[in-house]
Length: 396
Image 1 (cartoon, rainbow, N blue to C red):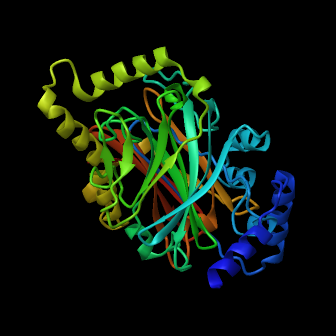
Image 2: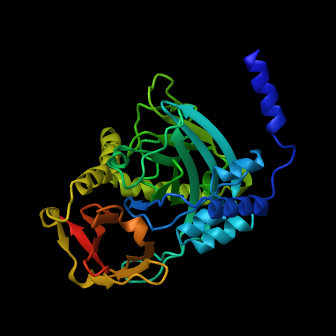
Image 3: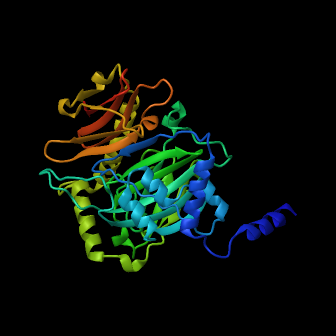
């Protein structure tokens, strides 16, 4: 009887047509205005080797009811939260592929909201070694992760947040995911916790070129790819979930039209990746270990950064002298910072004071980036006069 009632309610509450995107954005804005006691959230940026700072939000409404817009942030608004105006414009124009599929494994409900691909969609520039700005061609996707029992996800200001580990990556049919995943495809991500939901905004090199092969998106409870969570059939090329895995190992089919494929570009990309991963003289039996080592390298960096405090930072990292800036909050209580490395590259951004510090917190490690033996991180220190000292360090 209860099952039948649930089914009737489901059909009764499902709209016949998709709600208008502007209507949903209006609902979100109204909800924000009415919620006077809304908690401040902090946004965290984490980078992986060769990753450019970028974000994409695709939180389309699809077939959910209009009141669900109160639950999830809209694509345009969230992109704007990260200062990604180009992406926000792309979402507003309807260029995204909406998915809105939810899978539940382990203790989590994971929703793939959607994805978008294209060139020059990030406001954060990336430079080559000679200082020339690069035009990056990327795929951006967004997932929303929440506890299945309704318990709010840990806020970024809470100790429990550091214990949450997730890995989000496109996978390509026919290519072993141990070697071909976000870590090896110039991946990176931003995330934040809003109203008890964690939003992960992931990026990597544009995978549309592989659309004719078949594409997946995995969401895993780990900081890097775990070969035990999925199964790869070398003969068919299929990638499937390992049903025996006890944690979170969601796997979504990406509905990217096969007409977007570029077989020649795909082959060139694979050839380049194999060269970077294995080299000309890499022995066949050593390929897998080489790829695993590269994937786990960034995890070691992440673990090191978790140990860093204001008091022990000199033990783990060396200050970049010309990066130090004293940032004064503007009228909206935001601080702005910018750093350019010698030879090209660097970072810049704007952050709300409430996103930097909460409670009695006075020191914060922000984003980190790099590759091989050269990793950098940015720190924020709250001074007694209310200003913030921004500093970039090179990890030892």
